[in-house]
Image (cartoon, rainbow, N blue to C red):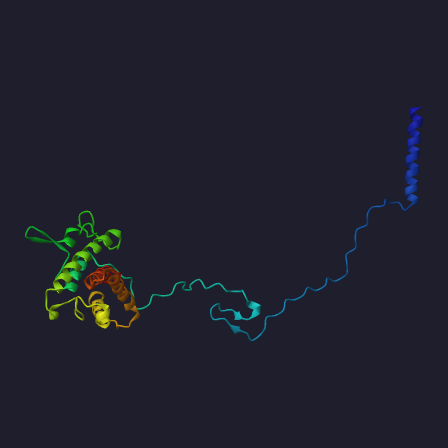
Length: 256
């Protein structure tokens, strides 16, 4: 029985091979694609930049719409900050010794002093360490920052010196005065405003070293200071004292 089944299977296989041979003797495998003979379409060429354009001096690139945005970065060695103007430097604050001499020079001999018995003590020397002067033990460099503590001592010095300066002016002759050189101590703006402005100009030159004309815009604030102080106090002496303190505490006095 088994032999019969095997024979039938062999016969069926032989018949299948015969049919394949009749159909061409090969199986239907996928055919390989033939290479294409068509040429690819040429890509579009970029347009050429215009001829005869100018050159941007800041970038070195052609100055036209074609090169807009190209090469706009500054060169590596380009200067990003303007060079300093010739003959200029940063203003510096006076040291303690310079400030003390400035007070004596401006007032004609009046300094920031106090009496201790029969001895006159200069307060700039007394507070030198507090004002930043080095003692060459704990410090060797002088602190020249115009901080709050410096401003406090400068204001104290200005009020003390101005009160004694104006008191002395009232006791000496006109030719010996160093503050009221163009006007009297009790002259009001209603009496002679031009003389008051002339005296302000003289004080600006004496205390700040600036020779200005009466109508110079830089004088406006000083004239306004006198007028405001006189309007409040109704006393020319108080107005001049305010001007004196303002000139001493202005940066144009203690910086150079």
